[in-house]
Length: 338
Image 1 (cartoon, rainbow, N blue to C red):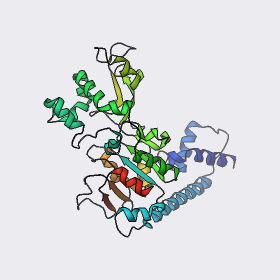
Image 2: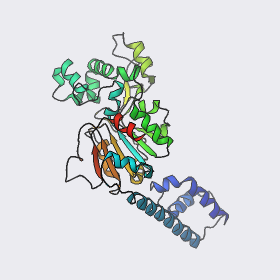
Image 3: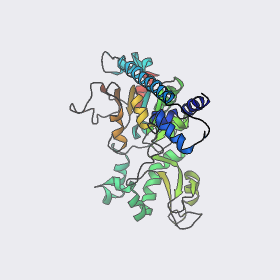
Image 4: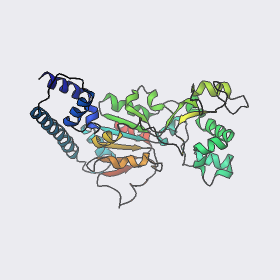
């Protein structure tokens, strides 16, 4: 029985791994322990393995069923903001997906809207207007560092030196304080979600952050604001002061680079548990971020809060029965909810 007690203690510690399917069962765990052989003098009876196995399966199945019933019990009479507000307290596992649109009111231009970053590229560097995304690629950074830095600093100056959280950013903290927030997944690199005081574990910066930078060669880390402020007047295209060989680049995911899988260790579990998915200020055109919306169960409400209708909310063939859009400014919407 001592061994069984130790196994149960280990299971408690490894519950996260079990739920994420890294450890699939008691037997799986038992075989792992046998390989490491931490309890050399103890036998582990097969009947106790099977009993514990059955208990675990029943527990996980009941939890899954309870979550499903809880989500399906939420029924909006009409798909609009007023009804969403009326049922707001019923939602307990809200996931928020954020795009550049939630930071526009902080003075940070988005990418695709009129007057946004891509319009700025067309005006200053018309030779890249046919494919403006290329200036945010790793290959462009390596080929044209001077243009990359010019565009990067101009587009990020506001967020690095002056931007403050908007009402929508404060709304994220409000969700957490009301025990309704499961996680925030943001495309934004401006760090404003965390400036509200929201704990880092609740924010997944899918595309990185502009607050820190690193040498492309030796990986030396820098505070972006301090580094670029000191190096901006020099004509060295921001060479690393540590190795003097590599160029310093922001800790953001550029086109052509892979997402950090460590950042996404919770995403499948989060979206499966989600009872309300808020998609705020994003065009849902950048993958794999845009594909996350398909990870939630069909019983989950998916609500687009954006000034413009975007796919799949504009397509009857891919739209789900519990999908709807609120085509207003994000700050305006969240002030009505809070």
